[in-house]
Image (cartoon, rainbow, N blue to C red):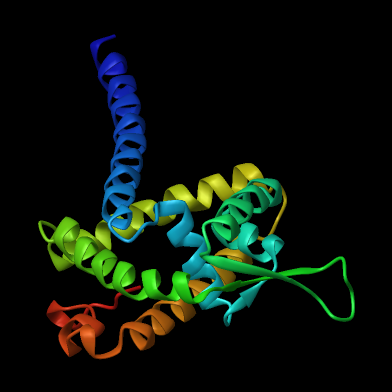
Length: 197
């Protein structure tokens, strides 16, 4: 009986710690990006538009950020009012809306991205190279199970390959975007040539 309680307590503690870490990281990002008149959601939209080549449909942003299209549309409305992004209609199909980053958004994005990179380095600094690989492995297992739950019968392996390809492209663009502000060792992930993926 004690062993069962301990096992159940460990499962619950693990679940709570995953949620707590996610919530605390979001609070930290909101504080950090607040210095640039952004929050974590607005920053994520700007990064996604930048990643997608400087122009994106709300549905593309929603897919990348794992959000509902309606929530991205409402967020985009607020960002347009704040002057961070611009909304334009497609010339051929007027129903299609494209979002682009305004000059004000660009002025906030680059320093916020550098500050975000510095924050990531600081938060992950207690973890060794091997600890980071282990954490990635564990999070990939959780990601796999959530994808399986949300997409019964789907080819999860293909979904994960597509996600990894997108993530790798994002990391390459991040390094290009930050350019010389990321020291060469950090571009390659720091110690032992660890990848930043």
